[in-house]
Image (cartoon, rainbow, N blue to C red; front, side):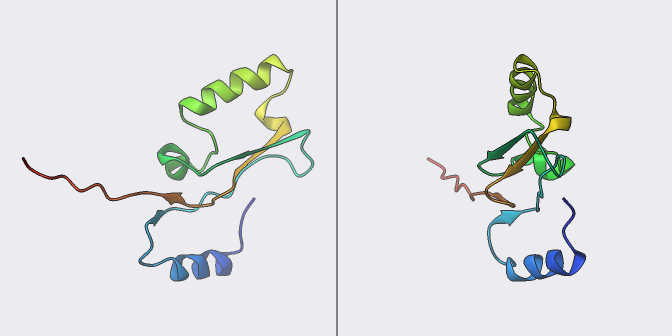
Length: 93
């Protein structure tokens, strides 16, 4: 799914200062046989804009194959469009 440019610009403007990274829209056919909704995009997903593209994606592909499906037949997205991240403080001893 491609979001309108104006909508993406508004989201980026409103999310300034928030601990978010990138926007991932999801992918798949308009009328899928199955829809999979993950929690939030990870590092790999934000970089290449492909849902479930890391290690979890490899497992997902195996599972889809076991039930006779491929990514071409499935719509895959996330409940949260941006990757949340946390700032970890390192304390010296």
